[in-house]
Amino acid sequence: MKFFKSQMKQLVKENKDLQKHLKELIDEHQLEKNLALKALYHSEVADGGRYQSAYQALDLPKG
Image (cartoon, rainbow, N blue to C red; front, top):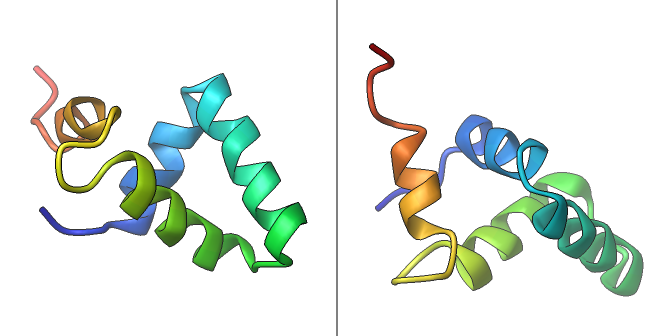
């Protein structure tokens, strides 16, 4: 599975818990938003993370 910034932004936009976690990462570690998104991806999405299926669903064709 690959990191796509646009998909990660969409996932965060749709999930209040991820929005909170992203803000915490930015505040606690003084990260830029793009780096915080990557960190969030690796901690919550990649390799069987809690939000992996939701992230993958964003890649499916709408129909």
